[in-house]
Length: 436
Ligand SMILES: [Zn+2]
Image (cartoon, rainbow, N blue to C red; front, side):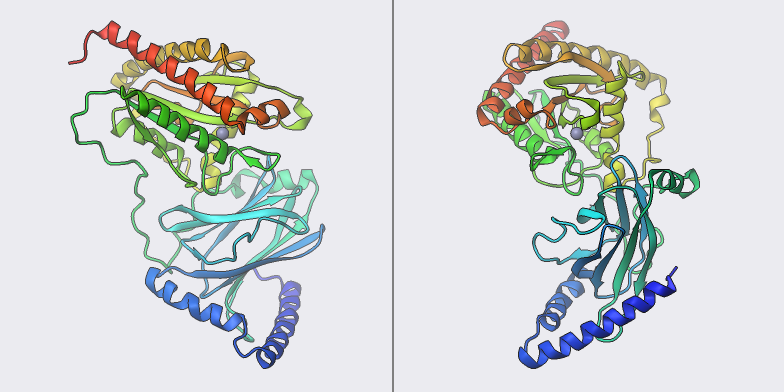
């Protein structure tokens, strides 16, 4: 895998760096490189995971190199994704001890990169690219010449056609961290992010609020705002307001900047026998597709209600690809006839809540011109929990983005959602009679 020419370039660079280090050692006795390696050693011993101590980019808009300093060699797998252009590197769990802000700005073909844990035993680095690239070479080097072991990736600019070819089916990733091939770390079993069921006999209906994305998955972005942060703030405000009413219990799928796979979000709702699941998102339209504005409420459907709903479901369902979850792990139980019956009833309730939500929201919030839609959102697939996904607006629309970051807009919107929740449960309890 090692490209010989690149290897030579690296050796020359290594020698230069080694020389620079010697000079640094002479002028400053505690050179920055040495203590950093030392200080990471106890942490590495404590966690048992490889430590990444430094990351940097070199090169230009034709060829860009990424280098990650490690305390030992690791296995990895790198692959490219389109729409938007990214390169993903899966590794066994790595303890990233990189300086704050690492990856926030890019160089050459790399706009920015982010990194983090995507599941127990698996870490991932995601590069946001300026355009289509190919991974010209990728390898891990042994420690040599005073340099630590390092992961090196070389990106090369390519045209769209060759990029598309490089995504041929046989080269498509399995969307799973490279942990199975790893021999360097003990992999704990993958555990669900689902919280343990609440044991207390609290008869109040349970509402699950699901702020989309999180952690390594930013969701949509515009004007310095990321969807994952906007929807978390909204979700927390909604939780607080619902709890204040005292009528419902609330569980969040995430309360901080953590990546949660889509299936685990569904699991939170199912294991806790939730009465309602509300996923919160904020959409974006690529500039070439014009402008759109307003909030939209989505329910689950095998067949998308229109092309935009289909595009959105595809985009939202990609969250797992970014986070490193194997999409092959679909539950097969959905074929079960009983589940099918439950699903039909659930669908009725989901649609009813979606309509009530629209009625309440449209009096206070700017809505999309077609505010009720449906498509195959994976996060809405709990067969026994009424579920809706709300796109609060478009971060790509100036007016919507102003709303999304405004506290008074958030308060108004949260208020109308709570009204809809009240109306939904009032009707539901009236239909089924008093709670047993
Ligand atoms: Zn989203």
